[in-house]
Length: 123
Image (cartoon, rainbow, N blue to C red):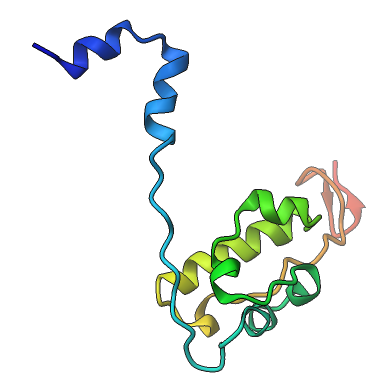
């Protein structure tokens, strides 16, 4: 009699990862809603100059983008993660106004914490 548990015990651990990672379900493609009808409208709505970094005309092709596709289009890591995060929020039917935000401002004071406060060295 065939038992999956017994057969997996005989498979090396390096191969067992293949069982889990190969059967990924395709992500749903959301319908355009509100003012967002094209990928460029979506990228303008999320801000951060995303519309200049990614240029795709097809709605279906845009929603099938992966991190590797954005990397090959030379999108920086932070922007790539932000775009993919916003795409997932849009798939979950969350209004864009609720999840769009500006990037963190650059630090003005450099240091490791209490040793430097307000630009002055503290002993």
